Image (cartoon, rainbow, N blue to C red; front, top):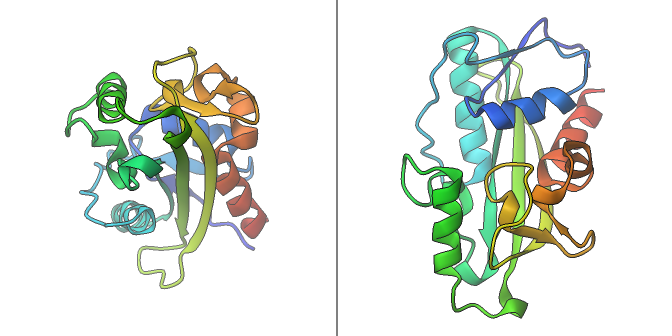
Length: 197
């Protein structure tokens, strides 16, 4: 597929941008929306797909460029899929990662160890232009278990509480490269790159 001259990465989350920039194909000519002075839109969708499209379309409309956007979050089975699309603001609009982790632990205080299953979910969308009627959509899912206390020094968001039973470590104990190999975002990025190869 012919690549556009430049693609805007539609996120103002610095840690997420760093992860995306590190792993999107090197032939992509990427510019972040922060570099272009584009503010984040209101995420009014009810699904990860809808919110990713809203973000990509907003950046494409303002920049006139193709756009890539990610929407991702944590879905906890015992909380009926919460925090889901509200993962980054689970404890409020201005919540920090620590605030969100604390709220999650409080919500799960009485949940038994064998019922603490969860999934990280990620959708990445690419629009060739703002009116693109057929967005390219790639997704990934990472199953795990919610710990009772944070562990590890890496990552961001809910990584300190998300334990991968296959690896025997939590997300925040993985190096960036180890995380990319198994994570929801890594899966989605590899799927997108395959489509665009």
